Length: 369
Image (cartoon, rainbow, N blue to C red; front, side, top):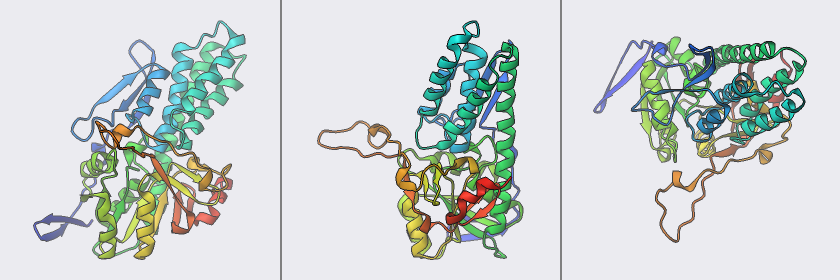
């Protein structure tokens, strides 16, 4: 496999050993020693300097983890939503009042799904378990709890399998160069954004296993720094050569011919192929088209929302001003959207677990078994 390491102005090439075992599983539903259902997750607010796993047993605690970005990334949010509802079912639901239980279930599911409005996976995962819960009414309490728990475990396994399929399809799509290629990515669409393995970085890992990755350039991703704190850390853990850059350096790298392809994730994809992703993605896409660099989006089909005709309909989460400047000073207003929308015309292809699609054809992915 190919590796580039920089030392001053010099670089050398050698063998890369991929070490995915150094990357922790991001989120996992378990039963503790008291047979109580708990959710363990990597607290991503603490990275890159401290790797801390938290364990919670209430759905409200999961919502707090989601809103404070302890848990983030569209696929991970899907499983987190399903797990949060299951914590309510297993630990907090009052089955003795079956007449009121469905109304309370709807309230809980709605609160979870709305914790972050842009990433459609959150509502998708929550709905999966809520629908199962609703269909099981009339069954015993033990049966309902067992079914919800097992459904979350199934979603965890399916997420990793899905990500590995995305990686395989994406690796085959990337340019092939004898000395390896350079990838640029924005935000974190790696293992930390999923249960395990990653979407955009899943493509990188699959390509690295084939020996076709020389280096990844990671945008810092202002204002919260997911690229600096998460992507760069994750790639370094895995043994993939990574260079961290400020967001405003990406265009100049493309202009100088240093980037062979851009691969990013997505939080919601509209029916026409318009894609919402972390703020700053649109600028990267515009620069990529300007300099003739292919721009790929890697995401599971659970990220597709064909109920929305275009990206204009995607709700964009607004975050607290303190993420940009803290403390504020008088006379300054802060605009802090968490996401922007990249029009389909800037996207070379969308990579899913069901194959590679042009943005215009992405809705067809949902019809493939």
